[in-house]
Length: 166
Image (cartoon, rainbow, N blue to C red; front, top):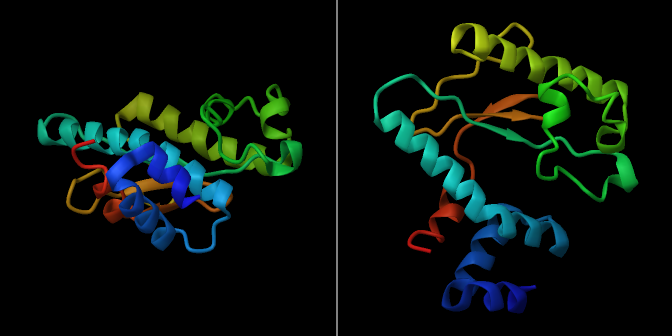
């Protein structure tokens, strides 16, 4: 695993591996590799949110969709675009992605209501979620959408910092 990361990130490979292994000490090598592979995309999403907030215009809200699908014995995990059936409250129509479970429908109601609230008011907060603060760079709050939705502050900041300048 370390050799594979070094092959991808060259001289920073050990630094990248160590940072993500420290952040996720119990992850399997496959899951750790998945987190590392997605790290630059996450870094870019956080940077885009920080830049928007720095403009001092409309507030921004940051989220992470962490819900893992039960299809294929859970192997796809929380994959790219997995949140879309939840945003549009179409988890049954998209059962091939969501499993069409009661758990998926419950989360979809929360996610869709956040998008509707944001469209109506410019703020995604609603009674079905914990208080979701607008993003500010120092703290980096984001809503984590999962079976239990929660706000987490920028939990992976140190690990993402190894990508500075890449």
